[in-house]
Image (cartoon, rainbow over all chains, first blue to last red; front, side):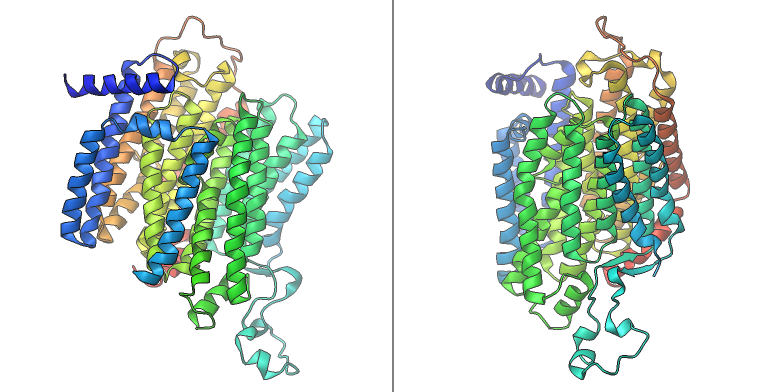
Length: 112
Length: 501
């Protein structure tokens, strides 16, 4: 099974779980594939900026992200499912973001 | 003091209130709305640079008449330089921002009056009130005044969605309000904490208090205030985690309304981002958070956009993604980076408005925004299709349009700041933006027309076509002569960067 078929199969499985409307077309599959590759490559590039903190940390983080991404692929349909219009999901991520920001500014500025 | 400075806010507010009284008097609404809308881009051109003190209460140090009766306790301390009045600051960057906001508002109002056969006073009220609020946010040097207009802008945005009569608009607007009911008070709490420790709501005075040791800048209260203000900034501009609801809001508004709403988001993003940098740039995490959030917005916005089948939702996500470019520039913290970020803000406000209005013609003609049900529209309107295609080129950063110049500057500034990875990410995401746009363009214009596709309105209003051409021309002019815009932005960028080139 090549990568395209593998991703298509996973998209179908996730789409069945979420009761998403409409058939899976070539356009939708290639869109997800593009988004997937973009997501992984941009995250890897972003993580590589950890070189400014510590080079060893950067190597570990890049390898970790790479293996996680390969094991959890495809990520994009899952992200799309998480970032839906449900108020409950949006509230959850809002609270999570607030917690991260306050921790960064409050704890981070006093302890780092 | 230049009296035209407060008029930039007072005229749209007065006009909004007056138009609301003229409900159902369509011809009068049209005339007054067009006249008032023309003043929106005109006032910033005519106004002189300077400060405006509401009530005329300038700081004592600026008072030309020496007041010898005051004790040294006042004249010899920080009280001498504090600003007792709500202060509006109008400098070169504000001139350009208010002009661009006014131009987008003028065109959006112009289109709304001609696309809507019975122009409602209420809809025009919402548009003018939103413009007044965002103009005030750009001009004010008072953080509480900023909060008041921040809430007015949020309410005006909700109002514009509520009157759109698009299916699901009430639900989306309600969700946005609920989330605003959490983020707004948290922003206010952050402002209250700053007021509590500094005893002031004037931003210049707060900075003075923090820099001159009147307040401990690492006090936990100040740090908490910073976190809460940053959270409010995320809500106001639609950055993650608010990008889903913001793109939903764009998709539930009329296209010209969405064009104006995204301009609101861009300028709230810029205004609050500048304030965060001005007050909290001494904190090591402030620029890092701006960079991190912007990066997440870019990646999530653009990767979510390519998966959408609804054109308005797609542009909504692209708009969020493009905000990330602005944030990268601001977050770099160098003069070059901030200039590039602010330049990108100007370009994005114009370009996204153009794309919303361009694809809005599809919605006007067919009433459909799902790309799976569209096709073949190039045969119906080849000229409009060409303008939409060019707007997509511009959005992706293809020369000779304006976004090419700003994205190039952003990439150069990230390399100069020692972060070439950011430059590579921006190039990669620009390519995906182009792909996203071409996917939608192909589906709407180039694919064979579905048999059951019904064209409800054959003729696109001239107002819409004129507005698109005006926006495209401005984008082309700025693209060919970028110094026209950059010259206005450099002084602010230099002052924010604090001498870092």
